[in-house]
Image 1: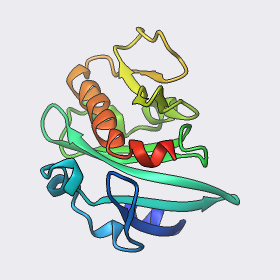
Image 2: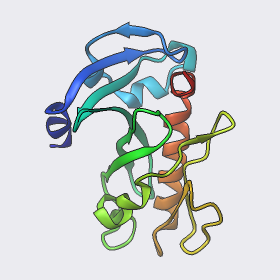
Image 3: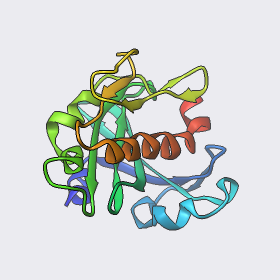
Image 4: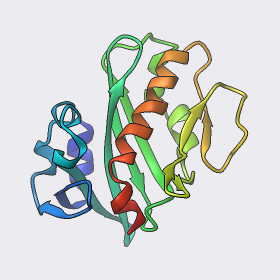
Length: 170
């Protein structure tokens, strides 16, 4: 279970609001992102996990969205600068094996390492059609034959991370 694995490193599982104010210093793992995304942004409780890896602070943002057949979810871990990806983890509830299901492989996920998340106040981290990368600082190749799932990951990243934009700018 990924949540249990992350819990080994988590120093804090805060809940913040869209203005980056801490609502609670615990309870982030209890948040149901599907329910929170249905609320207006100003009313959402956003989990934020703060970790330490090799003596460096990492911020982990959960992401949630839709793929071709069902839901997608995961985590985007950021370095202490809050703008460079330390690593990602994605999973799915029923994407096509060998196609969209490839989002859960290291080959797909490691493409995100060291990518930039935001530029000029907007989330630029993105998944583009395989072979169409124009901005290697923040774009990764989508999955050939898994276009709808790749688009779902792209939208999931942008929608989820944009909720944290005030926190990321601080």
